[in-house]
Length: 386
Ligand SMILES: [Zn+2]
Ligand SMILES: [Zn+2]
Image (tube, rainbow, N blue to C red):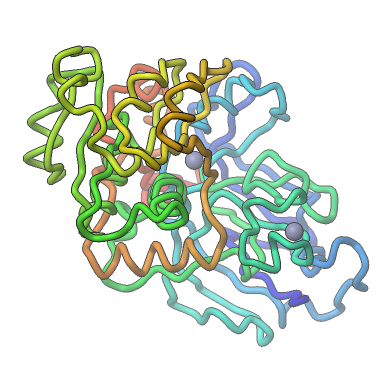
């Protein structure tokens, strides 16, 4: 196992990393960036990557690198986490798992990156590296997968995300960002992008000429349309809001649009889709979607409603249809997705915001009042000396 790290860090002093972070405490965001000393993530302790079995290195400089976080997207799951809606949040919390930055220093054992490289970190920063999932480049399905923030790292410390200029990650969990991919609009691909790219590939919904439905036109849905179109797939957007039609067809390049509440439209489109990527995380009926599928069609859920959905079995049986799920993607596939996006000029549609707008942005995310992703300009607006 490699023991190399890329370290996103603002300043290091002895065994302390001085972190200038934007941190959510129990009640509210700190409106000013606060200088914090994080003692449980010393630079000297970062060599630990082998689940506690390898001896600490005496030459951490060789195995580390420094890099500065420039942009971080705001994912809806950040909102769940800051509000502790999944019951697992530990405060203080530094959210953010759509992180891009530039490497400023690397140790001699870091092989994947060099100074000046543009890099990104998505939803995870660790896994066991030895189970079947890890062996098959599916770290995202490893039972010991370590989330980028708010999780326990190998050494027992808590992981911190990208709403900070300090980011620590093993080089295995860092992806290269090609030079032609804009860093700000590319950041959301690290979560939203891979979340929809992976099921399109895995479920075989990526063949030119196929017809795929994308349910929900938000952060996930709008990039799903772009990826599917770039794969040569015919795309129908399915949404509850008729007013998204023009946007879907003209700006995002979808081929057609269905209003899910319009019985006539839905009836007319029955049995026309090879597959559906359902990005909706609110409770919603599946029967109308299953009905849109051809025989052998696949309905893939990537949103996570907090309550169980009703699954109509009869139409599954009679059409040999599949209902499945998918959760982000492995590191190898994330790199493939980023490279594909760069090749096909796919980015997220974003609204770039300063760090001190995060409170307002969170409120707007709650109301789905964003087209389609907020990206924090961490590099220019997270000031250390406030
Ligand atoms: Zn996310
Ligand atoms: Zn594993």
